[in-house]
Length: 155
Image (cartoon, one colour):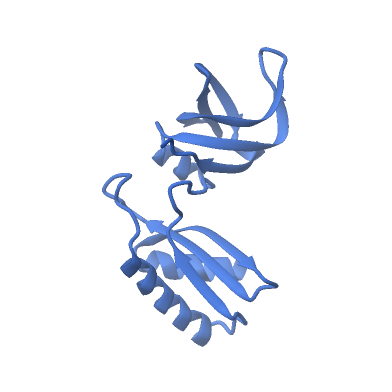
């Protein structure tokens, strides 16, 4: 799995994109690759269909020729408006955006309340912890305790 992820990440980066996420499902027969631009002009500089076709064609060639990966279907798409946040750089890039964070282990807040889920605005990252503003209070959540994090756009 790690070799496959490294191969896909290297190929995607050579084309000028970032590997946001990789999902393998249907007993390894479906590879779902989520990409974003490596250096977007702004948060509105999104992936388009031509970008997905380019990456899909290149990955198809690489997976067939260089690495005998057994898969039936390859899907390449944008991460969407509710994109997953995994790397420290993701949290930095989306400072000021609303996000939903789910922790592995609940934390005890100042109010003595135990919580595992947080919805708020990303305010920064410092010393391996994410700062998120929830209900007017800035909370500090260690990156190592984050199970899942996604942007949560408001419509």
